[in-house]
Length: 430
Ligand code: GDP
Image (cartoon, rainbow, N blue to C red; front, side):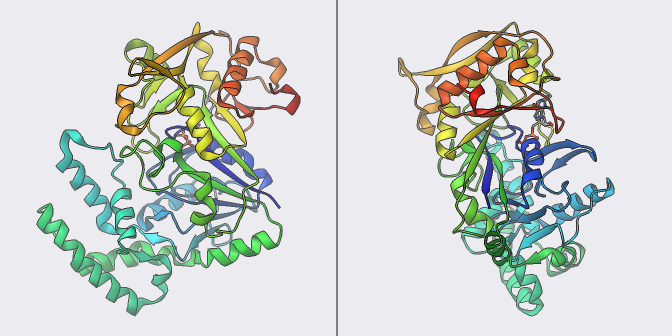
């Protein structure tokens, strides 16, 4: 039995979906333990290209059981649409390979609209929400004003509960935002169109995972976004509304007593960040446009151009520490092949002093990046599958990062496809 968490080290979009898809061959169960449909994990395999938003990335492996844990923002409407999209490309999603925790809270019809209304109110001070209703969902969850998935099996109590929530939420929608109230008919339509369809997947996931542990099954915990978006330890308030850290995985999945044997942190070979907030190493102008273009850096969910920059050692070291990573996977190393010189942000300058430590969120806007340059390799590396076949400049780049962040880089991804990977032996590591 072995438990592993696959988590983002930076701002998200590091390529977790691609790594989970690869690693699932050694796991029996894949669990999403936080977040909602606001991210997009891109997976390319023999079935085609997929942008997964809520479904765990293990859905493509036969025999793997995929679980949506209690801490996800369960949006029945988007989940049903995602299931339809994936099944239309020949991937089976049935209660045998997808389970939804009966303790997961439902993202209600008004959450998406509230996101939109609040971003409009904030105007130029907005946080850069993906408008998937995630922040209103989590704030309502912690006010105990949502519905648990398991309540769908208790129709009388459910209708009474929904009626109370409707009355309460309409006060905010109409009085604070001046928008149109929701009606019971709207909720009935939502129940029959979407919620009824997810019912076959709902069960006591906690009991299932506990038994899976007892049976010696291997469980992989899959996160959304990255360390710097963690609500408690990230760049607040430009974080997401949930905990993206590995330490939270067992709780968010439904087996609080599970111990993690491995924590694989995903780091992109350069930095990207979607939306608003401080991004110390950001590049601008032609240099940034070129990197964005070469790396296809546009949001999987929103299509928004991502902000780009060199690899940020300060933020990455902090991310590794927050995740407690035991190994690192570097993705998209192939993208840097066009560069003559490869920039790396090694330190920050803050109040006239050089620092290695990731600053308190409010101070981040005053930090300046200190950049060092490495020689580029200037050749295609996408076919390389062995460490010793990588150009020496690429080896030096990886070895430098490894030393700086203090964690072994075990996987180096050189392409989006499942097999475009270099897996290092211990003796290859510095
Ligand atoms: P996630 O949300 O962390 O799973 O990351 P995204 O899916 O948003 O972004 C990763 C993107 O990079 C996807 O389009 C992947 O197919 C692609 N990708 C992942 N690893 C590599 C790689 O090593 N090389 C290249 N060229 N593309 C990659």
